[in-house]
Length: 358
Image (cartoon, rainbow, N blue to C red; front, side):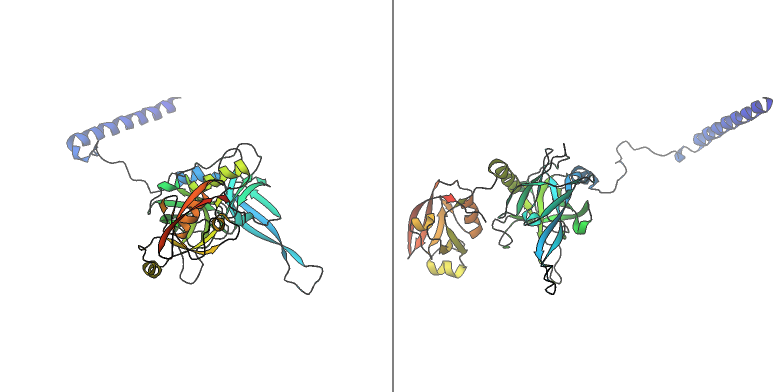
């Protein structure tokens, strides 16, 4: 016991001596104290999008499909068919278990399986699809699921940071980063209705159907395609904007399909030389390459070679503009066409029909 007291007294004396020495040093050399600046900025932390990934990645699933295809082995008559497997991604858009993916990911699949972010496996029901926008809606019954928050693609600006999340080559929860390179991209001939977000975030095989999110972790697009991988081509990828996804999903839930307007026209762009030759202002009008027999346009007297200048009073400058405008009309609705034929303006009234499905 006496030994313990001696050790305790020794430690106590050491502490007192140390404090006294520190007091003397500070008294004689105050400049050694650190200066505290109340206005100083806090220490910098490394830039990170980890919070955005944490908010959105749990909603991204991997898609595995199997398709029946003809076998290339012609030497064995008993093996005329084989099963091909492919990869893709899907995004949970609400807690009830609805997921969006690309139509081409699940088209003609004999078997579809999902692996959720938590590792669970499910066989989804295909609620519906829209081949003309390359979107499909799936459903699983597995209780409440983590859903990605939906953003607004119409507020995207060129230069905004975006993250692509998916399962390239089966590597789940892979995240790549880039910026919005362009919006409103069309004329790529990837699908009928094109209004792509272009980004340089890397998208590879298996990313199709995955999420394109902003820096807040909100869904702004569904990753869909890359420009042809020719030599020297990289950093050009495309996503379907979430505002378009919303409309397609709502239509499939309501009607089982997307109902669009149709008037039976196949237009082409006018070149500057053609516009000048017709006496029209530059970049105005589209020329009818074909008028489908029995369609609303044919019934109203429109002919191949007519130039369409306006639809319901809106000046028409591109084929894609006209296609989207007509598609947004309700079947049964009347629409007024302003055109140019034989050097004169004309008007025609059409009754919109439902666009035939692909």
